[in-house]
Length: 498
Image (tube, rainbow, N blue to C red; front, side, top):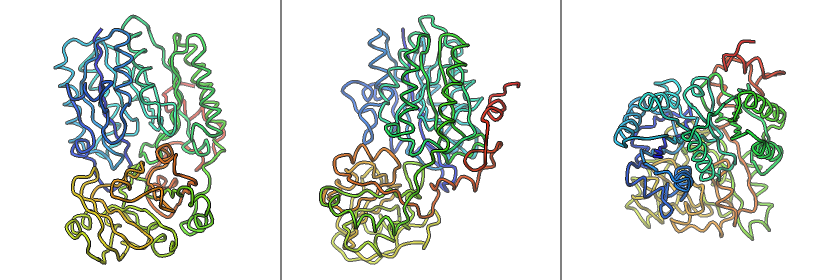
């Protein structure tokens, strides 16, 4: 049994002014053939700088345990950012299809996608990529893994034979999902017939913080675990969608993969009811910049034993923002005196101009060159204490502005891990406040030193209501409009006669 494996992954923010190109994939992760095999092996680093083991390494380990020969195809992963160019999509498709043709006889393929990839030049690019892969391999099974923030549509579901989503948020089960897909694919090759059912909910916010370890989603995900222990149930998934997707059918979705069509329909319906039941649990109210500063000042013991993390919720690079919003940084710089603070901002011009001015005192304006930010660029005074040109974020300089230490990067900064700051000589243990630009994943990496998380809303493209400015929803969508019954929208989206 020869099983191929591949990945094409990016989470797209439809409101970003930037276009994602193939260079953005190559900058982060782009592997084929033997290089991919080495990265996905037990001794490899699957995505350098992000994670040692993810879906592909989990797939390889489980598939080989089943006695399969695994065949590396192509793996491309770009950071969350703006819509992908058509040229990049065509090149990714061509690379994937070429890898398939060079692989020889395959009995099945595992494909890892995100589910929230978007393009202004092409509708539903992930469905298109899957369709193109199917056209190249018309007679073999394909199992597909998704981020649980993906969006399911009738076209994507038609292209995907067996879809499986992450079960954790923050995401930490990538290898486990890859292993599950390996088992399903191997079973499929050996003769098992999957039956898949799904539901689409006109709901884009709910579930409180949506963290799987916290209520109400803790109960929902535990129920999914119990469902998978029922006879005949192979996999169940809940998709909570990426908010900043331009699809007019945006919403949560459920999927069941079972041994019989009747069981699949019943399970998909049951999961949908659980998801719909938590719609009234909305995200907590976010802080203003000033209220966050006040709470951080009051958290003296927590700051003495670790740090306070401030999530720049209006400029979340982990959700596709460019990272050049200055609103929170301005408040910390101008009104955060007494709080030793680590922050970051994107400004290619400043990161390049100051690269060779180590030790100099400078006055510069930073940020707000790509997106609107209240107050525009931020004028700061500081000393250049670090600079390098080979970081994962391009050119990078660090300014000592007194109580504020500011890392300025050429590319979008993504301080998910403490190493973002520690690598330039700044201690996240000694800081009072550390600014992050990520909703969930930072919680794991900052677990040792984080004593308090404060989500701060200013004004930017990752505000939860920002999508209303650009998307014309086909149906009334909760919570923007009152919706009593999810089934009429679901029937239309799935093209089911009622």
